Amino acid sequence: MTDRQPPRPTDAELAILGVLWERGPSTVRDVHERLNKDGATGYTTILKLLQIMTEKGLVVRDESERAHVYQSRYGEQKTQRQLLADLAERAFGGSATKLVMQALSGRKANAAELNAIRELLDTLEGESR
Amino acid sequence: MTDRQPPRPTDAELAILGVLWERGPSTVRDVHERLNKDGATGYTTILKLLQIMTEKGLVVRDESERAHVYQSRYGEQKTQRQLLADLAERAFGGSATKLVMQALSGRKANAAELNAIRELLDTLEGESR
DNA sequence: TGATGTCAACGAAGAGTTTCGTATGTGAGG
DNA sequence: CCTCACATACGAAACTCTTCGTTGACATCA
View 1 (spheres, each protein chain N blue to C red):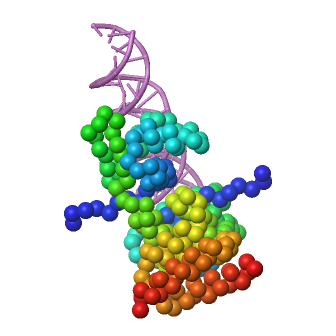
View 2: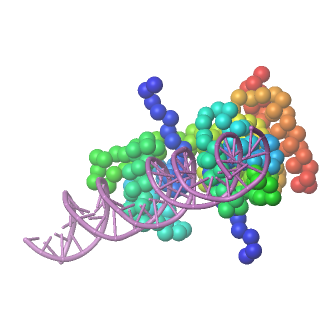
View 3: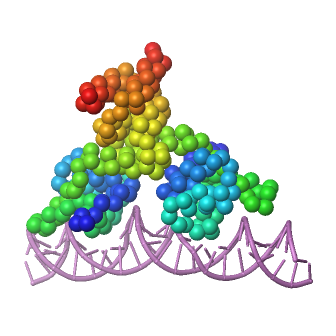
């Protein structure tokens, strides 16, 4: 065992990861400014969270400059898939298919989006042959 | 404002809800026995959680018998849809479609399941006309 | 009646999350 | 050199989550 599974990010951590994915490598200041568009969180709160996330291995820190630069250690899609697998396990008896169908049922239909999903289905079916 | 939004169930709470959905109204003992198939959690732990869940409004309690009977206040699908909406909001920029597509991408294709999803898509598309 | 088993209630411990105040270091300008 | 702006680090408070030990009520039965 060399590497440990990254922990599921908490709500506040996920908000920060969202900024890092959107902006790329960022300083605490960058993240704080972006996150303060709506609602108020103190600068040191973001700093502390990023420090904790560094310990957890959710982000990596570049300390070569005075203002440390953080970036997400795992890609957005990888994290999203992890979260989905986690939710499928906890709330859908481990069935990702049930999850997908429930997600589809619970929303207004939109022709363009439905088509995009259909195309994705075609691709998947092609691959599985 | 008359009614409050139910809070997102935690991991342990979701495990208990799973039992209640599966078994229907149950006593603490029922839930505890079902949950101890794998792993060990004490009886009083389940009891305490169900008490807290009652306060939160996640379950309702029938106290007419000596052994109180609990049942989930919200249906399984409603809760699942709520969890999905929540995850879409927190991790997919509010886009349920992105969530669905990511969920589809992140798994092995299975012909029968893909067909079921396709049929669901057809139904949805029919409704949207 | 007294022992045994089952039940709810309570409280508290320990970990994790989120928040921020305060301390401290450091570079830039006056 | 002194001060200001800005940065990290640290610690602690408030809250939630999960766990379980203990207590006391109550029923059953020998």
